[in-house]
Length: 269
Length: 230
Image (cartoon, rainbow over the protein chains, first blue to last red):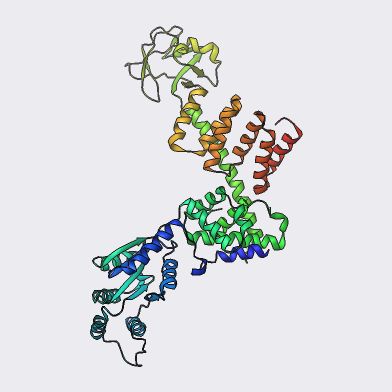
């Protein structure tokens, strides 16, 4: 039962850079983003549909490079202008704004211009499509100062994405698009995830036909695949605890895969 | 934790539904094949076993032109027996063998349509294509349509014809599209037995049985194990 619990937990959909799975396309995106940090760009755009690993990519780059570069990662959008600039002020000056005070934007821009050539600051904004228009406009002006570089991650399918993209169009110099996994990438992803959790036996049981079925349900979306395999191992865990005769230890069950798909609504009954 | 037993029940429901789909598709496909051929639909009256057209008892071929309902192709049939023009005909309510050669067509006013008034309706189905042609047509259609009902039909067709290699290939094609079609698994296993690969057949069925606990699979597997006929 324990092995199924461990297998299940490896598919919990959370940002855990220790469990980052290196597959061909994500490696390419990672390298592209890291290289873009070294270039003299004002902005880099990471975009893709939900569940393609934008947040994980930003987190990974942040954790890997935070000691080499001055990186700041805003994982959740701050939609109130005052709060956003207070936070920005704090990360850049390492000082708190006195209570009751506001950041004077023009002075702040001047302050940043003075930093040009002294510090290379990178601000990574996740879910940037959720920022209000006025904040986006001021981010644009800040990036124009040349002292601060923004890496913004956007959902591809949102209307907000179009707005944000349009907003930054002239300043975006590097675009990194993340896509759903191909069938072979999905296989690598699932296997590597299980290997990270030391579940070699289970990984060996998952054959191409199981991956094909998982691909059919999830279309190669990492978040959906996580949900699917989490549910599969949750069902395995249940059977292991209450009715172990229903589990074939030598074969990965298509039946349980289908049950999980029914549970998640991939299959209508 | 949600109710896994309830989920399992839903799964059984899903499997039953899924097993019905190919059968329905086959029935539809069969109907389509049955109905697809050209029709000659005409009405006429039968008087003492002979066909009467517009009150005229017709006993000799005298038609020049008649039109088929499906494609309006005109077929000249001067002094020819209809049976020689059309590969096969079916008369549901009449003895076709005694009628077909003697049915005469007479055009009413113009030469483009052919209508007969009657008390009784007779439907004549004209089958232009043999089984072989249909199979070929489905095979060529499958190349781009990739319809699992087609491949399943072909695997059954070739199995019935005794072409086990082809039946096996088509069962595999079906399986490639949807590995959950039990009928395809069963045909595949049967072809393996027919081709002397009994152990492989049992292995295949065992794999499917492990996943589904299907009664039919178990039954076939037992028959193969015991060397019984299936």
